[in-house]
Length: 85
Figure 1 (cartoon, one colour):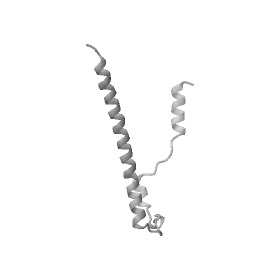
Figure 2 (figure 1 turned 135 degrees about the horizontal axis):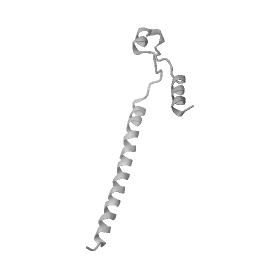
Figure 3 (figure 1 turned 45 degrees about the horizontal axis):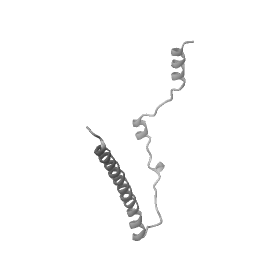
Figure 4 (figure 1 turned 90 degrees about the vertical axis):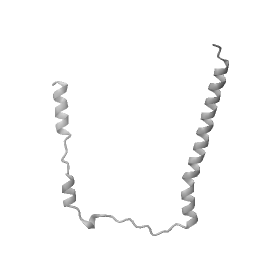
């Protein structure tokens, strides 16, 4: 058997029936939907902390990245200063 015929056999064996979107919409029933409900409520303090946590993380990353960029630029400028043309 050649590799092409093996490829064709493999593709035929791996086929599966696909459900069309129209069939999904036609068979859609309200009872199957799962409604998510949260019984617990967050206090305003907890919600504020949750909101501020990613902002603080982003500020730290920004500061770190700026320090790295400034260090690289200063090294490049320092290196250019010693190059003689």
